[in-house]
Amino acid sequence: PIMSEWGEKINPDKVWTEYPRPQMERSEWMSLNGPWDYCKKKSVDLSYNLSPTAFNQKILVPFPIESTLSGIMDTNFEENTQSTFVYQRTFKLPKAYKGRHILLHFGAVDWKCAVYVNGQKAGSHSGGSDPFSMDITPLLRDGEEQEIQVTVTDPTNHGGQPLGKQTLKPGGCFYTPVTGIWQTVWIEPVDAAHVSSYNVTSDIDAGTVSLTVESANTSATADIIVKDGRKTVATLIGVSVNTSHTLSIPDARLWSPDSPHLYDMDIRLYHNGTQTDRVKGYFGMRKISRGMVDGHPCMLLNNKPLYQFGVLDQGWWPDGLLTPPSDEGMRYDIEVVQSLGMNMIRKHIKVEPSRWYMHCDREGILVWQDLPSPNLPEGHEAFARQNFEEEAVRIIDAFENHPSIVQWVVFNEGWGQFDTERMTQVVIDKVSPQSLVCCASGWNDAEIGDIKDSHSYPYPSCPIDQKRACVNGEYGGITLKVP
Image (cartoon, rainbow, N blue to C red):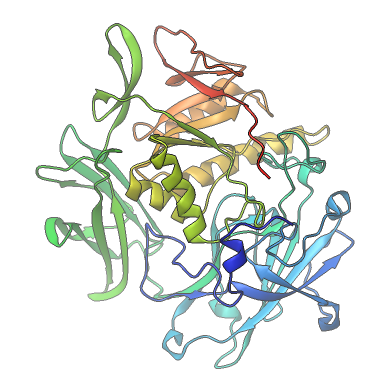
């Protein structure tokens, strides 16, 4: 095993302790990261495991089972596609949570899982890159220790789910499979009337921002306070939920790599005259668009051309695989990119934890976000296409508010590429006008979207197009070996 300097410093009882959803933060929450009981069943069966004697190992959550940092480092890749991995732990709820709804959150689990609380099924999820949650309140025991169990299966190459660079036979530019819980697990208490999400869209030309606060309680109302530092710059009082509202931002300070200015948001939810929820978030006033400059189409940031220069960042760690060893280590990568004079990162067929995008928002890094590339194994093609589309929409919903994400890449080269025009339109309908869209980075271009992208090895070259901005999405491949 190769350890990073951050992996070597890990305290198993204090792993990934930072609040995991920085764009919608509540003051009360509890991490469930740390050592869990663990076992492996050599059959595909997501049912509850009734045998406490089966748990013969400890695993460090949130690191995947194949990683060094998990303590498991399971390398039986082919066998694992026909196995089930079972996690179990107990926890006690703080007294302050009594009488409230308890949400159980998972940053990401690869790939299919079922969740049980006190022996009863709380829910299930399929999707390796998108966060999900469930209300476990009806399953809790009053004043007692609670038990949680998560069962996971992951067919990797055989099943038809998006893979990115995972493979059962690592080699060349393909890497180790990632199975199981690989991002933070956490709980938080909420009222029955609470904010489920929000969507924010800035318009620098009008000097406004549009905001929709989502809540399952349709009779709730919201107060929205926008601040620039300590100064309040905009407010909306008593507005309806699930409806778009527009706030004027006077003399708006724009977000850019040179000045990554962020506005803070305070959203307070009310039901029957009582405040029932409060979340904090932020947004950036910025515009990404495609326009003509000197007769050539190019990418514009805040209506001005900006040369975007960055790295192809695959987000793999020697000790944690898809999971960075720590928030500090994850932030270090971003800082190094900036120190090299770059202003952009193409996040390559991987979705990061929400905090990674937060650091890009704060530091002023532009992000070209790839969707994890689909996998179309024989016999699973129809499922794989539907699954890719559904997971793509969920990923965009989870991350589209980050001002750093200026481009979404639908397909990488020809990897699992299908229905390019239709799939690109699905993404355009979700993200426009907040982000640009590239139908395919390299290889099979379908003449749709904002970007024409070519791959050129080892030397850079750029395509030509009369309507879309042209970029060199990959070049290099120049090997630098280190001891």
